Length: 245
Ligand SMILES: [Zn+2]
Image 1: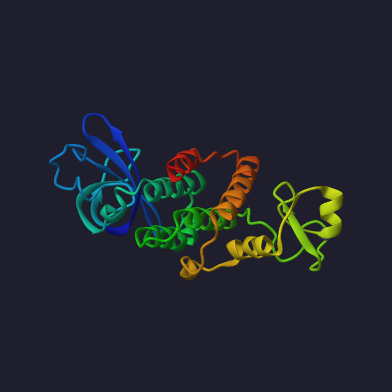
Image 2 (image 1 turned 45 degrees about the vertical axis):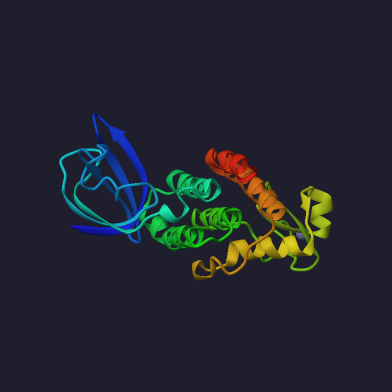
């Protein structure tokens, strides 16, 4: 069978073999690739993290991988940004989010357009910081943990929205913000919170935000992710380190 998608994980086993996870529009495809980690292996240059590839697969015999690789064709690589540490770390952060959050094919089909848009726009020079924020928000939404952004999460009021709380899971009106506690936000930040939970994948590179805006919201959403799903995104710390150099 043939499959087209993004390589999101290459796990070595035994000598020079690997189990490869390919994210496709229809779900996750897992295959074994024998000898792929040898430097002169036929498909070695195609089978790399975040490469967009078309693979030809045979029915495999392993319990961990249903298919084995016959041939891989590289459709789009990451050589454009391979020396850009910030952009590469953003890819790894996005890859870790997708690896840790999604296993079922239905959710993967839903997140796939956002993932593809994130990779493409980063390759084309879009702000990697904003890309992480947008992808993180889209992932929370697809996983069923999107924040309530249409009204106050506590009382349902649509007026006087003045802040938000990740503990409550959404925006808060002035009264509830005073009563419940939470983070007070500027009108611009409230608009950003609404935007990141509502934008369609086609508009991924439509707008980017300031570093301070991205970092505040990403850190809050990562706390939320950890509280809700007990998931930590370790690559984000590496991203922060390299983006400050
Ligand atoms: Zn309220």
